[in-house]
Image (cartoon, rainbow, N blue to C red; front, side, top):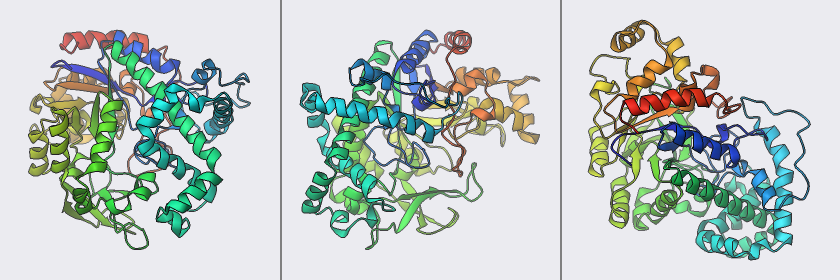
Length: 493
C-alpha cells in the first residue's frame, strides 16, 4: 500500500443481485472494475460469516465459515451443477433492499440441487475439494456438525441440546454425524463453493491492484460453533450460560449504551492455551484479506463486562484484557501487522499505547468532528498520518442523511469549518480526501449522495438493518469519474 490511498466501503450483500441479494458473482467483478477505473485501491467489506436471525455480519454462527447467501448461483450453473435452468421468481425481488426470507426461500432449492449434483458426480473426490478439506477440516468438521444439529434439533441454542452433545462426547458426535450426514456434507459443499468463489474474486481484485480490507468482530456469538466447541475460552457458568456479556456504556450512538450480548473471553484460559484460538483466527483472516480491521479494538486492552440478564449496557465494569500478548505472538510470526484498530468511542491512553506499540492505523470519522470545538480529534487538521478517515462507517447515517439532520452549534461549526454556505456530500468527501490521513474510506452511499433510506445499520436497533442494496451500477460511472479526479488531486492514486 502506498503512503496515501483511498477506497470504498460496501458489503457484498449490498451489490446488485438478480436473485435478491449481492453475491460473489458477476456484479462483484464489475464493482472491482469500477474501483480500479476510479483510482481506488481498497475495497472494504464487513464480516463474511453466516448470520443469525438479525442478519448482522457481527452476529455469526461461526468465526470461520462463509455466508451461504453470498454463493453465486450462476457460478454453480457454469460448473454444471444446476441441470435445471434458474427460473424467474414468482414475485419480483425488491430493487433497493434485501428480503432475506424471500431470498433464502428462492435460493435454497438451487443450492440443494447443486449439492446433490456435486455429490452424484463425485465432487467430494475432486482434487480441489480434497485440498480444501485438508486445509480447513480443523474448523469445517465442527462447523458442519453444528449446522446439522442446529437445523435438526430445533433447540433454542446449543446449550439446550442433549448433555452428551453439549459436552462434545465423541460417541454422541459420531452418532449425530451418521444421523445427519446429508446436512453435514451439504454444508461442506457450501463452504467449498463459498471459498472457491471468494478466492477467485480476491485474486481478480488483486490483479486489478485493489486490496480487500476485511473485518474481524472482537467477539463471537453465544449461539455459535466457536463457543460450543471452545467452552473453556469463554466466561460461562455451570449451566453453560454467560456470566457476563459484551457491549459498551452510553455513547454517541445510544444513551443506554450498546448491549451486544456476546459472551466474554476467559483470558486466563486463553493464556493457558497460548492464545491458539485467537492466533488461528487472525491467520485465517489474513489469508482471506489483504488487510483486516479489528472491530472494538479497545476490548483487547479492557472490556465492558455487563452482568448477564441486564436489559441495557448502563450497568457494567471495565476489566483488563491481554490483547497485547496476542498481537505480540502474531508479530513474532509474520512481522509487520496488516491490521487496523477500530479505536472509536471513549479511548484511554492505554489503548492508544497498545495501538502505537504495534504500529496499527486507527480510525477517524468526519461525522463525529463537529460536536465540540477546534480541538476535536475527528477534525481533519488534527489527524496524524497513521489513521484511516471515513466520512461515516456502517454504523453512521449516510452523509447526505446526516447533513439534513445536523442542527444548531454543530451545524454552525460545520459550515464555518468548510467555509461553505452550501453543504453537500462532495464537500465532505473533499475534506477527508484532502486530509493528512494515510487512507480515506468512503461508503458507497456517500459517493452516490444517497439519503437516510440507504443507511445500512442503526446501532441499538434490530429491525430494518443490513437490508440496503444497490439497485444497479449504472450511476457509478459518472460519480467514479469525479472520485478519480479527487483521488488524483489529493495524491491518493
